[in-house]
Image (cartoon, rainbow, N blue to C red):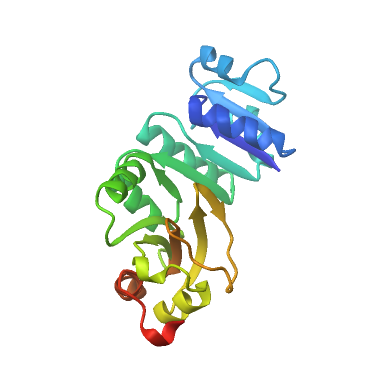
Length: 222
């Protein structure tokens, strides 16, 4: 793949190195040429000094052959404009924008532009640790149909197989966090104390999943 990244801050530079390590070609755009120092001497991709929504700058970065585009600068407006230009003018199918304002993020998600709302995600994670109840939405698909939520798990589910939890909630578990490490479980995975459980759900399922996971299992669930 060829990936174009707008913004060479901590997120952009980390993303660039991660993609390059996976064998992809990368071009990074930033208005501040000094920002490219974050990439280090070992970066083998292309750097382009300029505005990320300028068509000439994007062309120089290889947008016409790009498989993906990430707008991760510090400005919401710049990110969303660049994302729209990449998708609507150059036809890049995989586009994502970093958005700080959660209200804007919701609007652009409805337009089919996936966003990473940094402030919302961080606030939700803090709330999750302070008030471990209900559910926190971690991800939503661009069509607004499917979400991944983290639901609080009643201690009574410990030692039950994941199959029992899925059957009781009617939802599929996307992944577990165990000892701080993401894990792809199987139906026979036994739930342990401290597991964080992330469900794939539709909107009409969320309340049921949250209530079921947060309550002690019925005797028949084992």
